[in-house]
Length: 260
Length: 321
Ligand SMILES: Cc1cc2nc3c(=O)[nH]c(=O)nc-3n(C[C@H](O)[C@H](O)[C@H](O)COP(=O)(O)OP(=O)(O)OC[C@H]3O[C@@H](n4cnc5c(N)ncnc54)[C@H](O)[C@@H]3O)c2cc1C
Ligand SMILES: Nc1ncnc2c1ncn2[C@@H]1O[C@H](COP(=O)(O)O)[C@@H](O)[C@H]1O
Image (cartoon, rainbow over all chains, first blue to last red; front, top):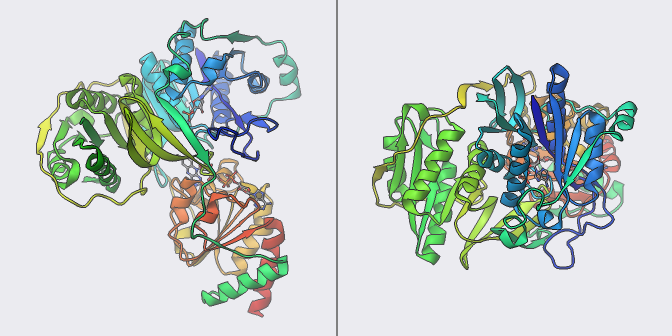
């Protein structure tokens, strides 16, 4: 069984977010990046399939040079090989363009199972995974928190609202967008990291995938015109002063609420 | 002008409130842009609900009524929505950003080769498309997005008030392929174990900013105890296995409204906010002055929680004498 995992590298969750000069994205220079939190669970879920049988795990990422680091980490965790789509035009693609690239790779690889994260921590689109499935023509399930694989199908639990789950059975081939907490993610071992150095990372461009004329900024159907730090409006009264002063103001408030 | 298609969701035999919020967004756009509004209802035995949707704002409502659609199914839904888009020539398709919406909407957009924008809370007519406002980076930044051509958008539940007017239009059966490879098995409800946050007068919740599992019993729980309340948490804390799921507050955890909610080291992503913003009084402690949690807090403290929380615990204990 061939399992393809789509992973995105995103700004570290604790990175400082400053708006860039043209106001359309964040300032990405000199900040730390990491594997999208949701995608770490997708990698783990794929590796569990491998541990349980004879699956090959291929990790795929679209992004600039820095993405190599994310792919190496996944290889260090145990993935078999990596594909890095490195092309400025690919980086500029919107969600549908991104999905077209990943769908092309899924078809080329003949992936039986595609695993992704539910959402990216930067753009928060939750868009790419079902799009890939639609373009490849396979079923999909999002918000997956548990999987049970048999020969020709996968039974998954999809998280709904407020503690409810939907159990569905997907015929293979299929795509699953994994929710955080689905498993406990392993760390790359020292041995794994050493072995990863010898594992192949294929670098591809849009031209290699036959997409040079259909994906990229010029083909986007959505564009980000402006990003900004939301104005806090008439919200919180900010307490100032030393820790003792702040705490005594808080105690007064709690007394006013009748809770002390 | 073209048509705006509003896709309804049913829950416990009724149209969801969120579907009427979609109607409100559609009616707002139609008022300025002159669009026609149409509805779509998918399910089994949903004829009456479709009539209700048609008369309460959605206008002419297309219905896919089939025993196979008794439970949500991604394939049946994506085919039905694409069929309705073709039948109406919809310029804009609105779907709620719910577990159903985020499962099906991107498939529809890809199938139609249309623009897709998710989890929007504001929409306007643009030139040859639409303009939307949404949040990115888990609520930390706002973003204005424009779309070109046919557009599929999901709308954040609760972002606008539900439409309360009426409309005419009636219903019309829509034929759509209801075969599917995906099989529904069952709905499971997580067993609740012990912790019932909904009964607490005071909840002290810790987030990823608490940093380590042992800090919950050491720092967060003592303040909850001093105030006679309960301890809660954001999702990453539960995902990491630091606390069990019953402690989780938010859209996929418990929805609470205590007299006092203290959030320490929680940024304020929408999925957390929907679980606690109805609290009577909210105190947020976060070292990032731009954290979105301050948008819903009554009182904010921009500081290290490890300075404030233990000092507050001591002061509360002292105040009790
Ligand atoms: C479908 C879906 C369902 C979800 N359901 C839920 C849900 O039910 N509940 C939920 O909570 N989330 C839920 N989420 C996740 C949500 O999107 C956020 O990822 C999550 O709420 C973030 O948790 P956090 O605020 O603890 O972490 P972060 O966003 O990482 O924030 C940590 C905060 O701690 C602050 N901090 C760090 N150190 C300190 C310190 N020493 N002192 C003070 N402040 C400090 C930082 O400034 C930061 O603001 C869901 C997401 C999805 C997609
Ligand atoms: N640039 C990318 N490279 C690889 N996978 C991606 C990329 N962008 C999105 N994905 C996948 O799609 C998921 C959802 O992302 P999004 O639709 O952007 O919220 C992510 O968790 C990844 O699995």
